[in-house]
Length: 254
Image (cartoon, rainbow, N blue to C red; front, side):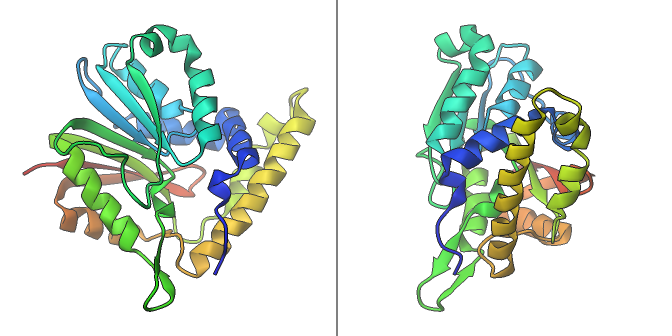
């Protein structure tokens, strides 16, 4: 068993907050934004919100007229980083339009009411829903499947589900290689090199955990099957993130 959970580590949270200027991450965000159809007066949920980049995208897509965006993350440090990063949307924060909740997606969605959400986003986090079968003594996909079901439950009819997930056996080193300009061509090169080392260490841990079934880098066909069996329709996806992730779009339609 790969013990511990580095997603709760403050240093990892800080390191990931620096990836926003890297070209692969910008590509991922741009691809995700194409599917975000946030409208004025709606309520959206961002799972694994990290530093709040998708919260900002939802805000912009609604022209700042969103009713509320709720960001969830397992890392309290990430939530602090997101709140700080989104201070430029101070008006929204002060009016209670952006809220943050600490929650472990492997357990629940923080008590979100059924049929209450207009849209759900999730950036590269659903693969890390984990469940240890105490009888079989192994990791399985129970938490991941339950998470799809819970997201379907909290969405309104017609609600959108937009999320990214890494391809099977992702090449994290390629992502770092594609980010070299943002690392080398800056006065902050020593800082970004340190950040890269933390992220590469994290990626080794992720791949070891995935190899024993704790985390789930699945073929696109498997993800589509899980979505459709849960009740999602109109599923489509697009390759992005230096070819190392897909962005999926699906709709709850009863």
